[in-house]
View (tube, rainbow, N blue to C red):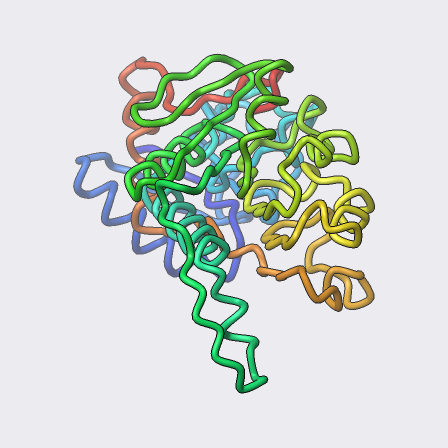
Length: 311
C-alpha cells in the first residue's frame, strides 16, 4: 500500500481527502492518505503539495518518487535546493475551464464596451453599437495549456487572435508568433492583450514602458497570468497617457493587493482577486492519481517541470 502525504492547504483537506479517495478507488490504487505528522517522512511515496502548505523542506522524504503540485505555478518551489524529487505542476480541465471563462468574460466586457453602460448614470441615451468580434484583434501572450485554451475559445467566437510564445506553436484558427521579433508583431496587433505566461526571468516585466508603447493606442490589458509579467509603474503611466485605456488584473506581485496600492483607486483599473484559474479538487485529484499510476508503472509523469526553464 502506498503512502500519500497531503501537503496542501489545511483548510482544503476535507475536500481533497474525499476527491483523492474517490479517484484512487476508481483507479484501483491501494493507498493511505496522511497529513504531516501522521507518517514518517521516509515512508512517504508521493507528496501532494501546494506552496502554501506546511512542507517547505523535502530533504527527509527520501523514498518519495515525486512531488505532485496542486498549483499551476511553480515559481515558489522550483528553486528550492532541498527538492531533488521530480516535480509535476497541475494542468487539469478545471483550471483550463476557469481560465477560459474568466478570459472570455473580460475580453467580451472590453470588446462590447460594457463599462460605458454600467457606469452611465447621466441619463444620456448613447446608441453606439460595438464592432463585431471579427473586427477586433486580440493578442494572447503565452500559449501553454491555459493560454492555448483561451486563444482557441476566443478564435471560436470570431475574434482575430494572435498568440505569442517563446517557442513556436501551432493552434488552429490562431496566428502564432514566437521569439523577440514575434513579440513586437503580436503586441502591435493587440487591441486587447491577455497575458497568460509563467513567472520566469525571461517573462518578468514583459509588459514594460517599451512594450506597452508597441500596443495600439487605447489598448486594453488583461492579466490573469502572473503579477511579475507587468511593470506596475509603466502600466500606470500608460493608463495616465491614454496609451492603455483600461486594465483588468487578477494577479499581483504582492497578494492580497495592499489597500494603499494605486490600482485600487485608479478609475481605469479593475482588481480581480486571483480568481481566474482555481484548482478544483475533483478534477485535480484525477490528474494526481494518474501521475501516481504512471509513477508506479514506470511511465513518464505528466506535466513534469523542467527546473532549468522554470516551468
